[in-house]
Length: 183
Image (cartoon, rainbow, N blue to C red; front, top):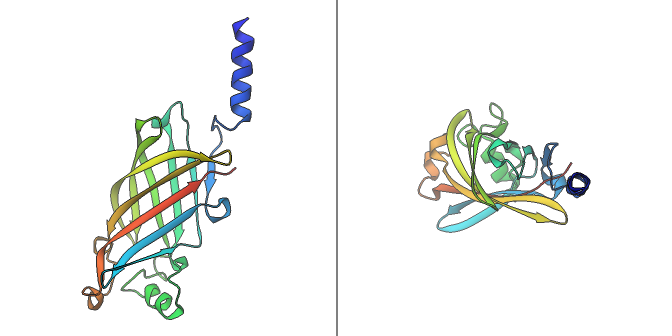
């Protein structure tokens, strides 16, 4: 008698989207957001990346087996001014002609709590790679699973920035994300 109940529970959980067998896609089309905040003359400037995509394989029952891949079109950073966008595309900054994409590839996921995990992986920007650990909070919105968090990077560690701007633009950049999983 218990077997049919367990089977019914599994079917209902699967139908409700709580079992994530297939990879989830994330990006602007799923109402996800990805922003970078830097300080210019002490004032925080936060702007979004407009073109990016990702795939997340998430299993709440086995979080450590989860994986994440994010690809960002670096020329899609919407700084709000065409002249600044042209400056960012230059070799000293994002060098989008040689390095059009930034990427993150997870190598391990460590559960911290029922709603939080740490994703460790390789962040590659402008041809330079660093291992980073990103704290991620798991939630839900409108029946979709969400992954949110933020982390700091040094733009200079990735060779981003013209030294002429060092007294104007701070080194630390905060990357914020709210990823809404879609199918």
